[in-house]
Length: 317
Image 1 (cartoon, one colour):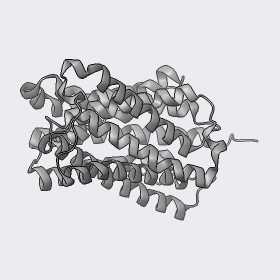
Image 2 (cartoon, one colour; image 1 turned 45 degrees about the vertical axis):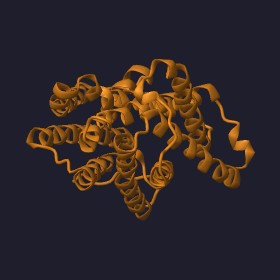
Image 3 (cartoon, helix red, strand yellow; image 1 turned 135 degrees about the horizontal axis):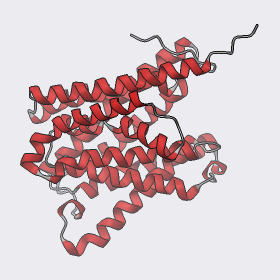
């Protein structure tokens, strides 16, 4: 196991706490996806409704925390338009992912989505000018091949919906690239609030525009039971809480330390898929998941090695 990189701002104890908090977030957030799948497949709600309520509640829950801790001045952030665009990417990505849950097993959808760090690696080279060597490019391609192993059986049965988690990974990749670009000088809570606002707005707009066309995943209907209302509210609360954990983890430990622990989501997703829906990945899908995870960890180790080499002080004589 690679040693944790040193940090100028985080002590080893803080980094351990950051890892534990990050893992907790990774274990919790598939619960939101499992509840969303229940709402869509068993309670008749649309992916648009679930995504809109999840982001609306994120905004409602984050705003008082933002005002209490940072004041109204924190709402005046640079690059407001780009922050709302981040939200639009997050909103459409959530819509695509929740629509996929109508068809795919939970673990499959999350495992396919796990190509997102690889997409960020490629996009950072294209849009941020970061150097991406051939080894990382090969690892990305191998990871995509692993995702295709997971997708293929579902694509044969469901067609294009099996590709929706990959679309979500692409949109969330853009979201993170934009986040890197606009983060300087902005409050993390304000960025999260505007992401929720932008995402909620685009989903609601899509539902209004597409209403005459009768698109099932953009339809609107009131939850028919108290249980459905409870599950719907829980998606927003759990999603917001998980992202607050992620934000706190990033305060305590560098992203390069936390990156490999993001794959705990797959463990949680497999467990929830089995317990709630009776789904268990078959051998080829396990292989595909292993390839995706292995490729992601290779990229992390490669970036970690480069970062350590770059950080070494020059030798003087």
